[in-house]
Image 1: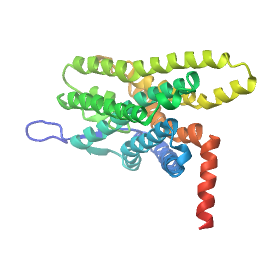
Image 2: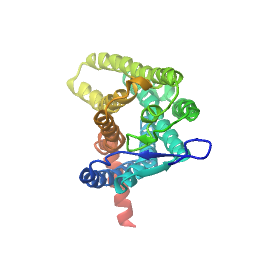
Image 3: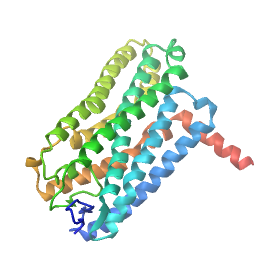
Image 4: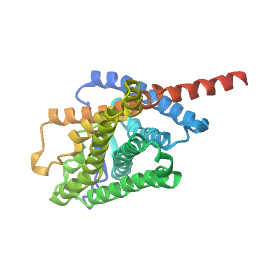
Length: 317
């Protein structure tokens, strides 16, 4: 039953697509292929940026952090997802569930803040191009990235520790593919108002504030670009920062759906609604990290030139 003598919960059951075995097979193949592409695409992007000294700039430093985040995020959840597709009732220990939730929440929160930092970088590059090397020096952009990681870790520690303190009673079935925090909160047999308030504060800090920074930055960026007299200059300026808004739309669109309105225990939806939310979460978990290398890096002429040079050097050896 997954309980000790003192009725403390020791394990959860990941429900996932247990009622749809045919879909499990299809999704296993799709998610497995996507995971391999995520590892390959982001791994290649990180290797190219580290290899080519011409790419050792603030923009590509942030991009390298983003790719590493995507690898870590998917690696913290996808293996568990794939395993759940292969078993009828996937059992996961309480401690293992909390660790997986902590890692996933850390990477997601860090990426939110990092996208805000990347918007600031593009703002300085477009609006203050002559002062850009001075403002975005190493002593500035490295602490910005570190700050994003620290914010994500601290936020995850708070949310995970509050969740671990909750009592869980008879129901230990998680209507999800992984140990997702909102799905776990629905199983608590106690008042979760503290968790709801904490999640609301978390949304403000790692979702709303970075999104405001991104929005304000791009208002100034667009205004600056429109003042550029030449059409070619406008085109180059837009191409420099067009990738970032695309990723922001995909990332925030799915993550706001999942976390912007944390539900209380009394607002539990139907199983179908839970599955739909889980599928959207799955989309966020594998599609966004898959698209980032394409949108940000592999379509970038500097990255493609560096990749060709690196491959050419290896062939000549």
